[in-house]
Length: 370
Image 1 (cartoon, one colour):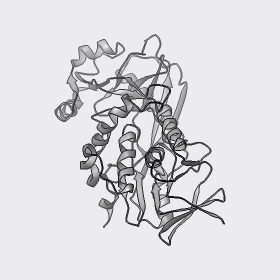
Image 2 (cartoon, one colour):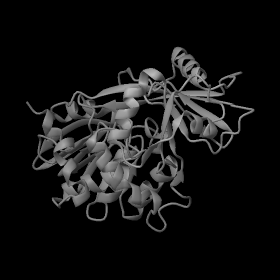
Image 3 (cartoon, helix red, strand yellow):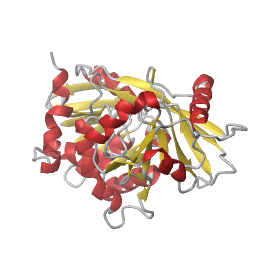
């Protein structure tokens, strides 16, 4: 088998792999391997993303904040369409969730208590007896996931990088100071750097390479599209309960996307929606909103993969030249610009930008080394 030498092999062309590949390609020859026929087929292509400053653990919030400027002012020519559209987030508090609301207000930024009356003014379908209080995050925005992902892939190609679709990583080994990877397409590559950005398959790739596994757990998340007529939802905020047991957000101007915020353990696979989860999404929404659901227009599911401590897994592993870009959970899109810069700097041996430096020990894969 002929082996092509390069500077970096990145496994997984979803958002995680695309961001680090694009950020690395101006100094390295990069090959981005993808098992599927299209990039972003799994988690990236099924994400209904929104940038939320106060979402996730401390490491997530650091990389989220560091990504904001890119979303709002991407480099010239990166995307033909804006990446961000303002969408505040409305947190509803039923009586039993008031402690969670107080904690959110105490620990969050750019968030204010608005009360149940103003919440109903923003979301007229809100049932009178559901929430006793509410809070509003004002600096959130929808993310154009496809435009962001495609922008990074174009950036990679413009800098001379290679995207290899239908190239599932098979045998992986380290020899002579380089990582070698044979693929399902019959090609093989060698490079001193190997980046594991395989999402739900992150531990599978690590095992192939002989790198100790992290203990990643993929979890299924369900999405449902309904028609909320007669309500005009285009300008509604994303709305859900503080306990994060459901949420709803406008979709395609006149539709509403619902989720039961489910986290069902799953092996790494092509996730499909479960009828029970679809029913739960509708039921929980209807407990809060007076919207009649005549039919479910569309449903889908995707996998969000978490490390045991639910923080991100980004940085050098235990083997030489092996780097992780995994464990993004539900935060991979909103942290993507920052995370790509963050890991590319470490691969080059450069200092991570100061605004993200505090996250280094929080997301280091070495925190799991016994």
